Image 1 (cartoon, rainbow, N blue to C red):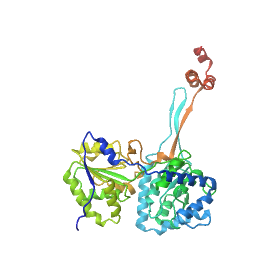
Image 2: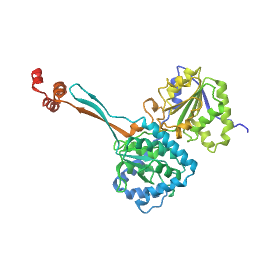
Image 3: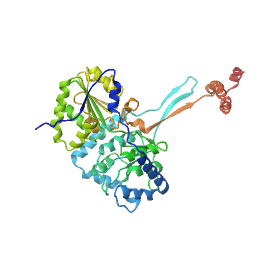
Image 4: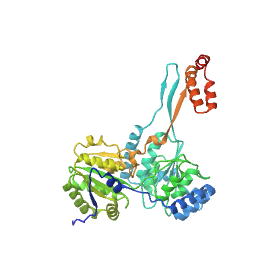
Length: 443
């Protein structure tokens, strides 16, 4: 088969040119004032008119001709029917994914702890799950049952009592696999709504849909903007950018495998970013050739080509250590390390959403069935953010229980600090707990 010439920029990294790499991967969210105003208006209408506005927007944007708000709810029987309708292979794959995601999530659970002092005073931490969470799942041509699993399972493991899923039914049609995944994850409520109006309904509630405490899940620019605008009323997971992968390769992994891994992110959309970091120019050329050979067989080849031409790159370095330096500057969503001694190199990584170690640990496994969550920080935010996990659906409360003796001792110093800050009611409250012995010390 004739190879297609692939257009992908090549950059030679210089140790004193870190800004070049940062500019290469920079991504500015395409939020514009028109979108901001549109979303603000939608949220206002949902707050003011509730289900009436929700129905209007569903007819307008989803082209779903519904007469009553009750028609927007998918009931348990419909989800169960969807589970029976999918193939045996799909059921097996979803069950395996659920088992592995849940097993991984169990290890993430935060727990209560206490420090008991010699006189019996207790200081500690108490963990509780969020009461309710809203899960947004994209609709339309996209069908992402994996998003249902990755968002719902950690919430369930955390102990969330009410998990509400929303997904638009374009022209009245909802993806069977998405409904089946909802059944498997024991979604409590499922509504066929989408866009900014769904986010607003989850945040503020309507007569039909009670509000939630947190909203998670990916979506388009209107969904992302709505999540940003309702933040503070509810918690959100993150404002995600385009998907991205960086691959450190020393040439020991065959070129067509590397090419396939780069394609696995490029096929998401034209703004996705796939970057190969290598010190082996011959290997880089072989990967480019392999991409040209493979792309003709890719159903989403036009998107892949646009992504690689727009934002893809091959970064040439002097050695593996410098390749790691480049990866740290990128702070990628996904980082594959395809090198000798990959585990040793991985332990030096501090900025990556997920680290895939060794030739056989491709990113696609992480997207579906490996176990760790595929909801990851993008656009360099892995410098300060983490993957979605059970801890995102749990809250921590501090616990303080003082005996009279400890309260008296602490109150003496609390009173001093409160008076220093000019907060005399604080000082009075503390002073009430000071016993006679400590009053003598104060004098």
